[in-house]
Length: 165
Image: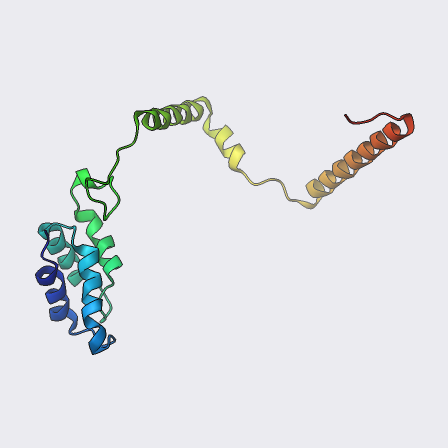
């Protein structure tokens, strides 16, 4: 169990003073939010996080519990980085082998597709369409022609009695 009172709350009092923007009767609930949010972290992670907060927090107000949790992420052990913050080991379920195989398959397919295309083909795919006036007028003419052909086909079907079944 981490010592949030000593490692976080008392340090915040030392660094920023009492939270003046919180009414006296609400200060216990205010501190409880920090306890609830930061209890799962080890003492070492909280110590490193508060050192980072001391060196990088630029406001004169206390950082929020969420800001402290976010600052703690780089100091978490590697084995916990894949787990969402705040979940204990009893509730955490690893990915199934089927979902891992699906991710591997998608990754390999992506690499095959990227290897099959040359850089020029990739650049052509992501280039913006030609929006010059002549290109747009030509596109508009093709669109109008397609509309006329479609309406002529519909008219011919109605006249001959054909249906679109």
